[in-house]
Length: 320
Image (cartoon, rainbow, N blue to C red; front, side, top):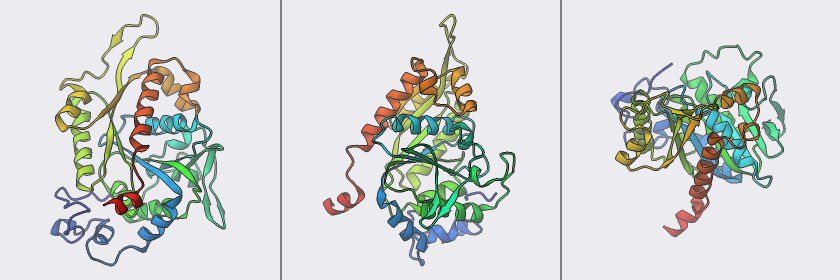
């Protein structure tokens, strides 16, 4: 898989797609479209498609294994508990699509209609799309270079019949590479509410998360806040709290204070979370009184509050 150059000028730069460091990057043409080159027509097409989507939230982390997909699934379940809220969850982790399993949709297939691909529904108000629905077996490996990944992300955003939805949640793979640049660039004609960044408390995770925060700043992606996942473990029998991942440098709280970004909350480890994900069931209904459930609900409320007072992109343009 091609890597984004270390000294990437950023998609908002006049040198985007044109600098010496851009040579060989699979996103070179896409980035250049915002710097004076002929724009990719898909950006305008996606802008038109996204007019029926009120809020768009990306779930990011520089580190793998910190619980992005688990959090994305719980955020989707939590928002969809209000039957009047339409939620869509888009999984752009092309090589490791775990959303179908977590959402209880393994083995489901995508159907095509006159208006595009139809997403798979968990509930009437909760739709899901993932490359996992396009594979003949969940064990199939997706061995693709950057341009093919970018093409599929373009199709997911442009060709899926999302309909009228309140929240589009995008679950991403770890890193700051092809998939992340693609989704931000293809949505550049629309208003993205922001990114929720997931970390665990230890410095080895925070180190990569700082890179992700830097990525957000470079591509001018607002940051909703940081979630510290697997924050601690409370024994269900003795109720003693243990630090499985010791926050040797102060954890997410210290990092957020240092970088002046919001800490949305801390989610403790709970064995039931893993069991619920493996069974494809909502953890909220399985463990409604868990400390993790209460933490999730508090975080979801903060995300809703972040989105609700913001005027639409069109209103911001008019007012400015």
